[in-house]
Image (cartoon, rainbow, N blue to C red; front, side, top):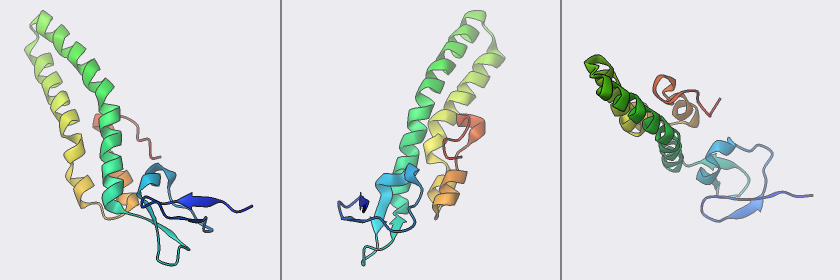
Amino acid sequence: MTTMIQDKNGVIAAAPSSVPDRHFRNAWMFDSAQTAISEDITAAKIIFKDKIREVRGPLLTAEDVVYMKALEADDASAKTASVAKKKALRDAPAASAITSADTIAKLKAAWDETVLGASPYK
């Protein structure tokens, strides 16, 4: 049985012996002979940033609750910490490590676990 794979450009070919990381499936592309799959790093960065946005949504919502509690308690230090955390979450997709990544391994390493929690790429 032959497995057929479609790349990001719609090209369909028989699966080569090695298949790259499936996290970036929509960034796959075949070489000209359709015998090997590589990953388009630009497309992979878009996928990576979308994953950050997906993960940070609930984190921002939870941080809004923390901020409101600090506001009700008139706790200036808690408000400042919450504002800083929300800023870090909003800035996460623009991290320089993502921009400078030139391989999938470096891109996966750009996941900031201190801000976003456990990496889905481990």
